[in-house]
Image (cartoon, rainbow, N blue to C red; front, side, top):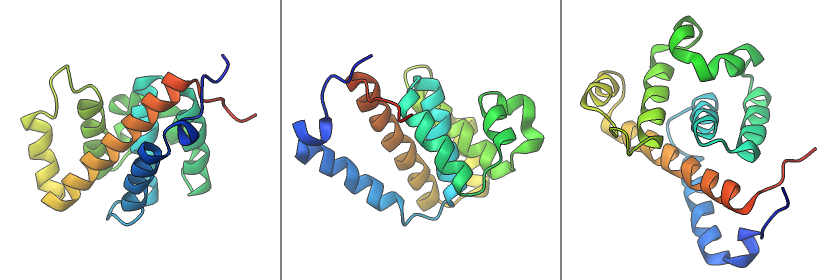
Length: 147
């Protein structure tokens, strides 16, 4: 597939606004691995090859293991590889990414409230929203994967 256009140059203001969200996410309470797990899992669901390539590399750079990345798509069957916090983050990521199916359920929200304060829950939601926006740009514009 060839790239359709470069959103960063075509609509600089919109791109800059999304970069603003990225800047915000640099200073939230989630650690780098937790943020990359959100980005990878949402990108798996959405099928964004560009983002999968970028965020699996970033996760490994931050110390994530290849095994956990390989198992991420089946994390429910490999729960012993993911902390309770990560499991809730992944469940939230899936439900928010697949918002039209059932949204963030009461059950998942209750689990999140047992572990995280409301500010952190809000940060998780914003992290999921942001990667979903990037996925939609990547897929819609056919962002090329670096070789």
